[in-house]
Image (cartoon, rainbow, N blue to C red):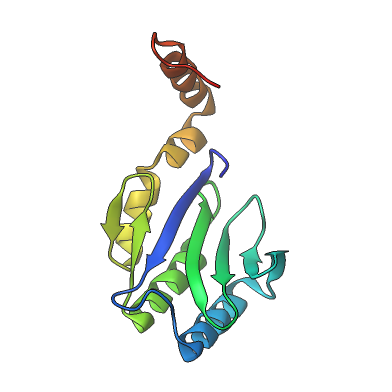
Length: 146
């Protein structure tokens, strides 16, 4: 994940995997928003660009196992947020902000607020300050990079 990207994981209400009909609905929604997907690896489709805003689908032989969104905080994500919220509501799901470890309702304002208060937003707003803070945190005694 790049410093300017904010990650969300789609979390289902019950079943760990999405049904075939739910998988089709997700793919149709993403095609409308991003166009055709590309193959990252076997069983891993990506809608969008690698270093920008994108949605990843991880599959097994028949089902989607994971849906994750990676948003470029510096880009206009209005259309993508609308699509992500509509998709989650249709599937009765919510999102997980991995960085903040918090559950997010599929409401545009909620996702936008989480994104704008993320470390990625801090980087986009002031890259130099972000890098200075990162350097200071790694320079503290007891911190090691290895």
